[in-house]
Image 1 (tube, rainbow, N blue to C red):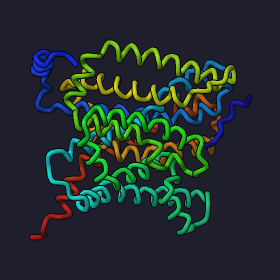
Image 2 (image 1 turned 30 degrees about the vertical axis):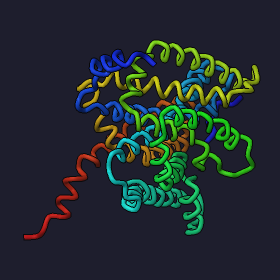
Image 3 (image 1 turned 90 degrees about the vertical axis):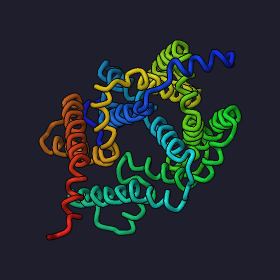
Image 4 (image 1 turned 180 degrees about the horizontal axis):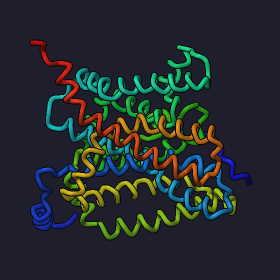
Length: 366
């Protein structure tokens, strides 16, 4: 195979004692910022590694070294769905919910930047003469979310936000019923994504419904959930390591056509949930001032990093091709360095300078 890259229930008194003993500090949800930062880095790896995964000879060690972490990293998108659901539920608890105001905020904070970055990507592709200008084509790309590899996530998350009143009703259910309902949706979600004839199932919210519903349960009972993770940490970590090893080995062998992994979708869902729960626990465990200080600016800039990083990646790959650089390994390391450094540095700088710029613009003339 050519190495030329392809462009492409305990006793009540015990519970009370433990709740008092491990009561979170005032900033008890800083771990969610740490989680956001970590997932942002994982998503970048998925996009950076994609070319190498599809270009390396699958019999080589290089393929294994890139493809196994690539497969392992695929939990990040469900994790981001669940994280968004947790944040939505926590932020809307115990206060009056105005659907119109909520959707206007989502449009301003999420959809408008998405529209802007679609125009930026489209303008870049026009400059490269990838296709002629077509306003209908641009509108379709925006609607489907396929102009860049990561954009479909915005299409999905906006569908969930549009159904916000439904999720608030779900959050009011008893926790046992809610958990059962979340897990029951796994079966139709797997079928919908893999066996239905509906196009673009990866851009329809049903595919990710189990993760969103579980995020609502977690957000509605956040402190109890963290207590549960702490008390079951040994079983959780052990189970995650076992299932992760099994799933990744079998996925690798399946990609090599050594065996047929017939129940990979079911195992992938189980793997995703275990990875998400374990990563949340790790973020709680490492929630220290110095670590948080590093993760906070990355988390604050994560949406801009998410929107922009594929543009940097695409441009670097094109420039390497123009320069005659076709070594898969070289392309992987160069594109990794550029895609991790440039969007992160510029996005963090933008977030930090944004209030200053806004203040200058809004400052009344004297």
